[in-house]
Length: 402
Image (cartoon, rainbow, N blue to C red; front, side, top):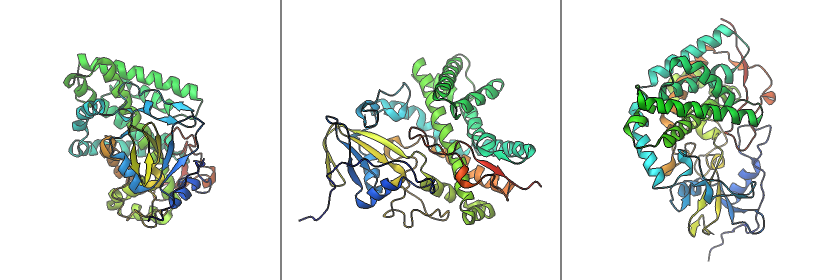
């Protein structure tokens, strides 16, 4: 007879992080993971069951199981108080097979390790250009504005084939999307950027160039609407995530000077350091899946129509998988982390993101070996909106002039 204890009373944990520990998952979620890797969440009367899954093994299992749907309309959001609307056209994260399989096959060959490695030289050039500009400007500086956001934005320009004469305007628009102004202004900038990308995608059909968007425009059966949607999806997936990893990762290193010194003094540590930073920070903190049929997970019986909320950041801190999991240790073998997801929806652009970070972190620390925060750590503005990728709104830094 099993003595396993299962919490039956639904809980309503706070997903807010402790202000003194900006890199850690919400303490209430971490406490629940230690008690039990899957627990029922409170939901309005009459709503389907909602579950929080925070254990590494359970999260990895469900991400690989097609009985858990990525389609937004299958997912009940307890805060919204209803099911989510379907994904926009071209948004791969909100699709299941066979639709997802169709789009994934078209894109997978464009993001191979070999193809992404060919971009390393350009990543290095762009990183050097941004560091040159940062040095010319002089301290202090907002690292988000001068470095973390422009590097991935310029690489997206390269990848999608944004014409050189449009790139300054394109970067202004991407900055506006990530800006800390009103949600209305951000949404307007997003719509404007999406319209630009759709127009660009259609122009590639008529006059292709050597870039990913042209490949899709001329070598696939995507409709005009699908082509524009995929372009917008690639922008969103490849810009905000990497920009926040570069900024928040630098913040984490500045708060862990021994780890910063290790990477600064040994750039060969970069590949492993990036994996550990991905695990430790897990900026895409949560995800959701809809349950398509009755299924057992972690000893619990979930019913068709239920929703699971996935605490990816808590799973990546599960001590059963990663000993001393709350420590940042750049020499840790962080293989198997779930920062890029798992299964058929694992991030397509992960290899490009890795290359950008492997180049950018050592280059930044080598160019500015005395880099440090220009304000007290508690004054660094964080992105606390749970609908956003986690990160910092700005990172004021300074350094010694040469």
